[in-house]
Length: 115
Length: 112
Image (cartoon, rainbow over the protein chains, first blue to last red):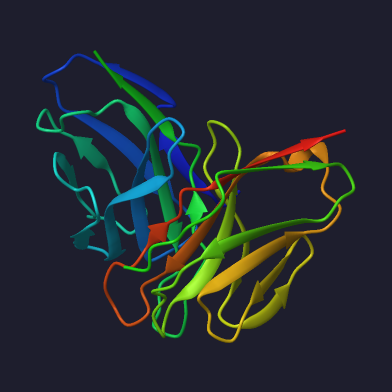
């Protein structure tokens, strides 16, 4: 089955700790994205990557870091510098090209709670 | 960035047609318009995408006027299972750069 997976589904951490959220896709997509969603709000882009070993900041990158060492994987680290890390985190992937835009396939999300 | 505006919520009944409009006055020449559906605690799911005029697939239609400053998602004969949040997304990577702007979303509630 082709798809995009995120783990774990729920994650609990103490304030001041870094935490890494996993995102893996087997769709052979070039582009991957991380979004944050707060209760009752829309999606805000944290980071995105169009190719391996390259990534760009989105609208709310402060306090987050990413890596893209493999095409299939795009882990997100929520650092202690992120002021309000408790949120629902969504990873997505898509094809990438300059001839048009491609639909994003989203993972099931990770709900992070920091206390 | 192409900021989008949608109604916060809409109510409908089963069997009716629902039209959700998204305003995007600052849409750029290369921007596409994409709609997603999201159920609680799940990732959004692609519904439809268009650039201009009208696009139709098996679940929805998308109407885009000539000036492209707005778009309307049309859901024919909705059912209870269509109760969800619908997002309008304008932009993409065409031409390079980050231009992904999700709207605030429209909560659609379908009743019997």
